[in-house]
Image (cartoon, rainbow, N blue to C red):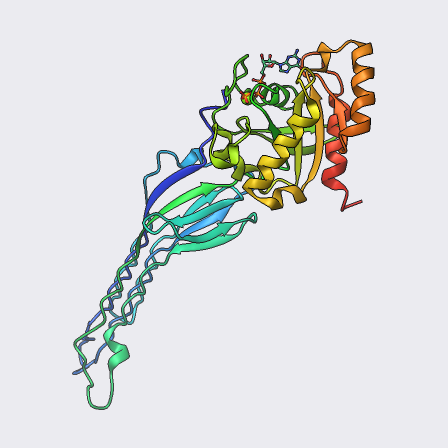
Length: 335
Ligand SMILES: Nc1nc2c(ncn2[C@@H]2O[C@H](COP(=O)(O)OP(=O)(O)OP(=O)(O)O)[C@@H](O)[C@H]2O)c(=O)[nH]1
Ligand SMILES: [Mg+2]
Protein backbone atom coordinates (compact mmCIF):
# COMPACT_ATOMS: atom_id res chain seq x y z
CA UNK A 1 0.00 0.00 0.00
CA UNK A 2 1.28 3.42 -0.75
CA UNK A 3 -0.72 4.81 2.17
CA UNK A 4 2.13 4.08 4.57
CA UNK A 5 5.11 5.29 2.61
CA UNK A 6 3.86 8.74 1.90
CA UNK A 7 5.85 10.81 4.35
CA UNK A 8 5.52 14.54 3.84
CA UNK A 9 6.70 15.86 7.16
CA UNK A 10 9.85 15.18 9.19
CA UNK A 11 11.72 16.92 11.96
CA UNK A 12 15.50 16.70 12.06
CA UNK A 13 18.09 17.92 14.51
CA UNK A 14 21.12 19.25 12.69
CA UNK A 15 24.69 19.88 13.77
CA UNK A 16 27.34 21.30 11.53
CA UNK A 17 30.96 20.52 12.41
CA UNK A 18 33.18 22.56 14.70
CA UNK A 19 36.11 24.39 13.19
CA UNK A 20 39.48 22.92 14.10
CA UNK A 21 41.79 24.76 16.49
CA UNK A 22 44.67 26.79 15.16
CA UNK A 23 48.04 25.51 16.32
CA UNK A 24 50.38 27.47 18.61
CA UNK A 25 53.40 25.42 17.64
CA UNK A 26 56.88 26.91 17.79
CA UNK A 27 59.42 25.67 15.32
CA UNK A 28 62.36 23.80 16.82
CA UNK A 29 65.28 22.49 14.88
CA UNK A 30 68.89 21.73 15.54
CA UNK A 31 71.06 24.73 14.82
CA UNK A 32 68.05 27.02 14.53
CA UNK A 33 67.93 28.91 17.77
CA UNK A 34 64.55 30.50 17.49
CA UNK A 35 62.55 28.96 14.70
CA UNK A 36 59.51 31.04 15.43
CA UNK A 37 55.85 30.25 15.30
CA UNK A 38 54.74 27.76 12.64
CA UNK A 39 51.34 26.58 13.90
CA UNK A 40 48.87 25.99 11.06
CA UNK A 41 45.18 26.90 10.86
CA UNK A 42 42.34 24.63 11.88
CA UNK A 43 40.14 23.14 9.15
CA UNK A 44 36.58 24.28 8.55
CA UNK A 45 33.81 22.26 10.17
CA UNK A 46 31.57 20.30 7.78
CA UNK A 47 28.38 21.95 6.49
CA UNK A 48 25.01 20.28 6.47
CA UNK A 49 23.60 20.78 3.01
CA UNK A 50 20.16 20.10 1.58
CA UNK A 51 20.14 18.98 -2.03
CA UNK A 52 17.21 18.74 -4.43
CA UNK A 53 16.80 15.34 -6.07
CA UNK A 54 14.21 14.88 -8.80
CA UNK A 55 14.09 11.12 -8.31
CA UNK A 56 12.69 11.40 -4.81
CA UNK A 57 8.95 11.79 -4.28
CA UNK A 58 8.55 11.67 -0.53
CA UNK A 59 10.51 12.22 2.67
CA UNK A 60 10.17 8.56 3.57
CA UNK A 61 13.92 7.96 3.49
CA UNK A 62 14.29 10.52 6.31
CA UNK A 63 11.51 9.17 8.48
CA UNK A 64 13.89 7.54 10.95
CA UNK A 65 16.67 10.06 10.59
CA UNK A 66 16.35 12.20 13.68
CA UNK A 67 19.82 13.59 13.72
CA UNK A 68 22.30 14.70 11.06
CA UNK A 69 25.85 15.65 12.04
CA UNK A 70 28.65 16.89 9.84
CA UNK A 71 32.31 16.18 10.64
CA UNK A 72 34.55 18.45 12.69
CA UNK A 73 37.49 20.26 11.17
CA UNK A 74 40.89 18.95 12.17
CA UNK A 75 43.27 21.04 14.22
CA UNK A 76 46.17 22.86 12.63
CA UNK A 77 49.65 21.56 13.28
CA UNK A 78 53.32 22.40 12.94
CA UNK A 79 55.00 23.54 9.74
CA UNK A 80 51.99 25.71 9.01
CA UNK A 81 50.01 22.66 8.22
CA UNK A 82 46.31 23.37 7.91
CA UNK A 83 43.87 20.86 9.42
CA UNK A 84 41.57 19.00 7.02
CA UNK A 85 38.04 20.34 6.63
CA UNK A 86 35.27 18.36 8.31
CA UNK A 87 33.17 16.21 6.00
CA UNK A 88 30.03 17.87 4.67
CA UNK A 89 26.77 15.98 5.07
CA UNK A 90 24.16 16.05 2.32
CA UNK A 91 20.47 15.49 2.87
CA UNK A 92 18.74 14.67 -0.41
CA UNK A 93 15.15 15.85 -0.62
CA UNK A 94 12.43 15.83 -3.26
CA UNK A 95 11.66 18.99 -5.20
CA UNK A 96 9.02 21.01 -3.42
CA UNK A 97 10.52 20.55 0.04
CA UNK A 98 10.02 23.51 2.34
CA UNK A 99 12.44 23.96 5.25
CA UNK A 100 11.19 25.56 8.43
CA UNK A 101 12.83 26.45 11.69
CA UNK A 102 11.06 24.01 14.01
CA UNK A 103 10.95 26.46 16.89
CA UNK A 104 9.73 29.60 15.13
CA UNK A 105 8.05 27.87 12.18
CA UNK A 106 9.68 30.47 9.95
CA UNK A 107 10.30 29.28 6.39
CA UNK A 108 14.03 29.24 5.83
CA UNK A 109 14.31 27.78 2.35
CA UNK A 110 12.55 25.98 -0.40
CA UNK A 111 14.04 23.39 -2.72
CA UNK A 112 12.60 23.52 -6.20
CA UNK A 113 15.34 22.38 -8.55
CA UNK A 114 17.25 19.21 -9.15
CA UNK A 115 20.79 19.56 -7.82
CA UNK A 116 20.00 22.78 -5.95
CA UNK A 117 22.11 22.98 -2.78
CA UNK A 118 21.37 24.96 0.33
CA UNK A 119 23.64 25.07 3.35
CA UNK A 120 21.29 24.84 6.31
CA UNK A 121 23.98 24.71 8.97
CA UNK A 122 27.35 26.20 8.25
CA UNK A 123 30.46 24.49 9.56
CA UNK A 124 32.49 26.57 12.06
CA UNK A 125 35.54 28.37 10.72
CA UNK A 126 38.87 26.93 11.66
CA UNK A 127 41.01 28.98 14.06
CA UNK A 128 44.12 30.74 12.77
CA UNK A 129 47.45 29.25 13.78
CA UNK A 130 50.00 31.32 15.67
CA UNK A 131 52.16 32.13 12.65
CA UNK A 132 49.43 34.52 11.49
CA UNK A 133 49.99 36.65 14.57
CA UNK A 134 53.69 37.14 14.22
CA UNK A 135 54.57 40.82 14.15
CA UNK A 136 57.50 43.11 14.80
CA UNK A 137 56.44 43.51 18.40
CA UNK A 138 55.62 39.86 18.96
CA UNK A 139 58.04 37.54 17.20
CA UNK A 140 56.86 34.42 18.99
CA UNK A 141 53.14 34.56 19.64
CA UNK A 142 52.23 31.58 21.80
CA UNK A 143 48.59 31.74 21.11
CA UNK A 144 46.33 30.64 18.28
CA UNK A 145 42.61 30.97 17.68
CA UNK A 146 40.23 28.27 18.76
CA UNK A 147 37.94 26.95 16.05
CA UNK A 148 34.41 28.35 15.87
CA UNK A 149 31.80 25.84 17.02
CA UNK A 150 29.35 24.45 14.48
CA UNK A 151 25.70 25.45 14.41
CA UNK A 152 22.88 23.51 15.93
CA UNK A 153 19.45 23.86 14.42
CA UNK A 154 16.13 22.05 14.49
CA UNK A 155 14.41 22.01 11.14
CA UNK A 156 11.13 20.69 9.88
CA UNK A 157 11.00 19.50 6.30
CA UNK A 158 7.63 19.64 4.67
CA UNK A 159 6.76 18.49 1.21
CA UNK A 160 4.47 20.24 -1.16
CA UNK A 161 3.90 17.71 -3.88
CA UNK A 162 4.93 18.89 -7.28
CA UNK A 163 2.65 16.55 -9.15
CA UNK A 164 1.50 17.72 -12.57
CA UNK A 165 -2.11 16.78 -12.12
CA UNK A 166 -4.11 17.00 -8.90
CA UNK A 167 -7.27 14.93 -8.50
CA UNK A 168 -10.15 16.81 -6.95
CA UNK A 169 -13.43 15.21 -5.98
CA UNK A 170 -15.91 14.36 -3.28
CA UNK A 171 -15.15 11.31 -1.16
CA UNK A 172 -16.00 8.11 -3.01
CA UNK A 173 -15.80 9.76 -6.45
CA UNK A 174 -13.33 7.11 -7.60
CA UNK A 175 -10.10 9.11 -7.41
CA UNK A 176 -7.96 6.37 -5.93
CA UNK A 177 -9.41 3.81 -8.31
CA UNK A 178 -8.46 6.02 -11.24
CA UNK A 179 -4.93 6.43 -9.90
CA UNK A 180 -4.65 2.66 -9.54
CA UNK A 181 -5.59 2.05 -13.19
CA UNK A 182 -3.55 4.77 -14.89
CA UNK A 183 -0.43 4.39 -12.73
CA UNK A 184 1.35 1.61 -10.85
CA UNK A 185 0.34 3.06 -7.49
CA UNK A 186 -1.73 0.80 -5.24
CA UNK A 187 -3.82 3.12 -3.12
CA UNK A 188 -6.49 1.84 -0.78
CA UNK A 189 -9.91 1.73 -2.44
CA UNK A 190 -13.23 1.14 -0.71
CA UNK A 191 -16.90 1.79 -0.91
CA UNK A 192 -16.99 4.34 1.90
CA UNK A 193 -16.06 7.98 2.29
CA UNK A 194 -12.61 9.12 3.33
CA UNK A 195 -10.86 5.90 2.40
CA UNK A 196 -7.86 7.97 1.42
CA UNK A 197 -6.35 9.67 4.45
CA UNK A 198 -3.05 10.74 2.97
CA UNK A 199 -2.08 11.79 -0.54
CA UNK A 200 -0.89 9.15 -2.98
CA UNK A 201 1.29 9.79 -5.96
CA UNK A 202 1.45 7.85 -9.15
CA UNK A 203 3.38 8.22 -12.36
CA UNK A 204 1.47 7.84 -15.61
CA UNK A 205 3.62 6.25 -18.29
CA UNK A 206 2.22 5.74 -21.76
CA UNK A 207 2.85 6.18 -25.46
CA UNK A 208 6.63 6.03 -25.79
CA UNK A 209 7.89 7.38 -22.54
CA UNK A 210 5.41 10.15 -21.98
CA UNK A 211 5.19 10.55 -18.22
CA UNK A 212 3.46 12.78 -15.74
CA UNK A 213 2.70 12.62 -12.06
CA UNK A 214 -0.79 12.48 -10.61
CA UNK A 215 -1.64 13.20 -6.98
CA UNK A 216 -4.67 11.60 -5.37
CA UNK A 217 -5.71 13.49 -2.28
CA UNK A 218 -8.43 12.82 0.28
CA UNK A 219 -11.96 13.81 -0.75
CA UNK A 220 -13.13 17.40 -0.46
CA UNK A 221 -16.58 18.20 0.87
CA UNK A 222 -18.62 21.36 1.12
CA UNK A 223 -17.10 23.49 3.87
CA UNK A 224 -13.64 21.99 3.41
CA UNK A 225 -12.00 25.41 3.20
CA UNK A 226 -13.33 26.08 6.73
CA UNK A 227 -11.92 22.81 7.95
CA UNK A 228 -14.77 20.35 7.41
CA UNK A 229 -13.78 16.81 6.55
CA UNK A 230 -10.09 16.10 6.07
CA UNK A 231 -9.45 17.11 2.47
CA UNK A 232 -8.64 20.72 3.38
CA UNK A 233 -5.45 19.66 5.13
CA UNK A 234 -4.20 18.33 1.85
CA UNK A 235 -5.27 21.16 -0.41
CA UNK A 236 -1.78 22.56 -0.16
CA UNK A 237 -0.61 19.51 -2.06
CA UNK A 238 -2.50 20.58 -5.14
CA UNK A 239 -1.63 24.26 -4.87
CA UNK A 240 1.27 23.78 -7.23
CA UNK A 241 -0.13 21.30 -9.71
CA UNK A 242 -0.46 22.87 -13.09
CA UNK A 243 -3.66 21.02 -13.96
CA UNK A 244 -6.63 19.95 -11.88
CA UNK A 245 -8.70 16.94 -12.81
CA UNK A 246 -12.13 17.04 -11.21
CA UNK A 247 -13.88 13.73 -10.70
CA UNK A 248 -17.65 13.73 -10.45
CA UNK A 249 -19.38 10.36 -10.45
CA UNK A 250 -21.95 9.71 -13.17
CA UNK A 251 -24.54 8.86 -10.52
CA UNK A 252 -24.18 12.17 -8.69
CA UNK A 253 -27.62 13.76 -8.23
CA UNK A 254 -26.44 16.99 -9.83
CA UNK A 255 -23.08 16.90 -11.63
CA UNK A 256 -22.88 20.61 -12.31
CA UNK A 257 -23.70 21.45 -8.70
CA UNK A 258 -21.08 19.04 -7.36
CA UNK A 259 -18.46 20.53 -9.66
CA UNK A 260 -19.40 24.04 -8.53
CA UNK A 261 -19.11 23.11 -4.87
CA UNK A 262 -15.62 21.76 -5.51
CA UNK A 263 -14.58 24.88 -7.43
CA UNK A 264 -16.00 27.07 -4.70
CA UNK A 265 -14.06 25.24 -1.99
CA UNK A 266 -10.85 25.68 -3.94
CA UNK A 267 -11.55 29.36 -4.44
CA UNK A 268 -12.16 29.85 -0.74
CA UNK A 269 -9.01 28.03 0.12
CA UNK A 270 -6.88 29.98 -2.33
CA UNK A 271 -8.29 31.96 -5.27
CA UNK A 272 -5.16 31.24 -7.30
CA UNK A 273 -6.30 27.64 -7.55
CA UNK A 274 -8.75 28.80 -10.16
CA UNK A 275 -5.97 29.97 -12.46
CA UNK A 276 -5.08 26.37 -13.17
CA UNK A 277 -6.30 24.41 -16.14
CA UNK A 278 -9.29 22.26 -15.33
CA UNK A 279 -10.75 19.15 -16.83
CA UNK A 280 -13.78 17.28 -15.53
CA UNK A 281 -13.99 13.51 -15.70
CA UNK A 282 -17.44 12.04 -15.22
CA UNK A 283 -16.35 8.89 -13.39
CA UNK A 284 -18.07 5.52 -13.07
CA UNK A 285 -19.63 5.99 -16.53
CA UNK A 286 -20.01 2.22 -16.83
CA UNK A 287 -23.16 2.74 -14.79
CA UNK A 288 -24.75 4.67 -17.65
CA UNK A 289 -26.38 2.96 -20.59
CA UNK A 290 -26.07 4.61 -23.99
CA UNK A 291 -29.41 6.34 -23.71
CA UNK A 292 -28.70 7.85 -20.30
CA UNK A 293 -25.26 8.88 -21.44
CA UNK A 294 -26.65 10.69 -24.48
CA UNK A 295 -29.16 12.51 -22.29
CA UNK A 296 -26.53 13.49 -19.78
CA UNK A 297 -24.21 14.61 -22.54
CA UNK A 298 -26.84 16.91 -24.04
CA UNK A 299 -27.42 18.42 -20.61
CA UNK A 300 -23.74 18.86 -19.77
CA UNK A 301 -22.92 20.38 -23.17
CA UNK A 302 -25.60 22.93 -22.39
CA UNK A 303 -24.78 23.89 -18.82
CA UNK A 304 -21.47 22.59 -17.47
CA UNK A 305 -19.37 25.33 -19.00
CA UNK A 306 -16.06 23.48 -18.72
CA UNK A 307 -14.33 20.75 -20.71
CA UNK A 308 -15.33 17.24 -19.64
CA UNK A 309 -15.26 13.62 -20.69
CA UNK A 310 -16.77 10.34 -19.60
CA UNK A 311 -14.51 7.74 -18.02
CA UNK A 312 -14.75 4.46 -16.21
CA UNK A 313 -11.87 2.93 -14.31
CA UNK A 314 -13.75 -0.33 -13.98
CA UNK A 315 -14.50 -0.85 -17.67
CA UNK A 316 -11.43 1.13 -18.78
CA UNK A 317 -13.50 3.54 -20.85
CA UNK A 318 -12.08 6.86 -21.92
CA UNK A 319 -8.78 6.40 -20.12
CA UNK A 320 -6.54 6.80 -23.13
CA UNK A 321 -8.43 9.89 -24.19
CA UNK A 322 -8.13 11.19 -20.63
CA UNK A 323 -4.36 10.71 -20.63
CA UNK A 324 -4.09 12.36 -24.04
CA UNK A 325 -6.11 15.35 -22.90
CA UNK A 326 -4.05 15.74 -19.72
CA UNK A 327 -0.85 15.41 -21.69
CA UNK A 328 -1.96 18.11 -24.11
CA UNK A 329 -2.92 20.43 -21.28
CA UNK A 330 0.41 19.91 -19.53
CA UNK A 331 2.41 20.47 -22.67
CA UNK A 332 0.50 23.14 -24.46
CA UNK A 333 3.07 25.90 -23.82
CA UNK A 334 5.77 23.79 -25.35
CA UNK A 335 3.89 23.20 -28.59
N1 LIG B 1 -18.91 1.26 -11.15
C1 LIG B 1 -17.76 1.86 -10.88
N2 LIG B 1 -17.35 1.99 -9.59
C2 LIG B 1 -16.19 2.61 -9.35
C3 LIG B 1 -15.40 3.14 -10.41
N3 LIG B 1 -14.30 3.72 -9.85
C4 LIG B 1 -14.43 3.56 -8.52
N4 LIG B 1 -15.54 2.89 -8.20
C5 LIG B 1 -15.98 2.51 -6.85
O1 LIG B 1 -16.25 3.66 -6.08
C6 LIG B 1 -15.88 3.45 -4.72
C7 LIG B 1 -14.95 4.54 -4.24
O2 LIG B 1 -13.74 4.48 -4.96
P1 LIG B 1 -12.38 5.17 -4.45
O3 LIG B 1 -11.43 5.11 -5.59
O4 LIG B 1 -11.96 4.62 -3.15
O5 LIG B 1 -12.90 6.67 -4.27
P2 LIG B 1 -12.10 7.95 -3.74
O6 LIG B 1 -12.56 9.10 -4.53
O7 LIG B 1 -10.66 7.67 -3.73
O8 LIG B 1 -12.69 8.07 -2.27
P3 LIG B 1 -12.04 8.74 -0.96
O9 LIG B 1 -10.65 8.23 -0.83
O10 LIG B 1 -12.90 8.27 0.15
O11 LIG B 1 -12.11 10.22 -1.16
C8 LIG B 1 -15.26 2.06 -4.66
O12 LIG B 1 -16.22 1.16 -4.19
C9 LIG B 1 -14.90 1.78 -6.11
O13 LIG B 1 -14.91 0.41 -6.41
C10 LIG B 1 -15.84 2.96 -11.77
O14 LIG B 1 -15.21 3.35 -12.76
N5 LIG B 1 -17.04 2.32 -11.92
MG1 LIG C 1 -9.42 7.59 -2.23
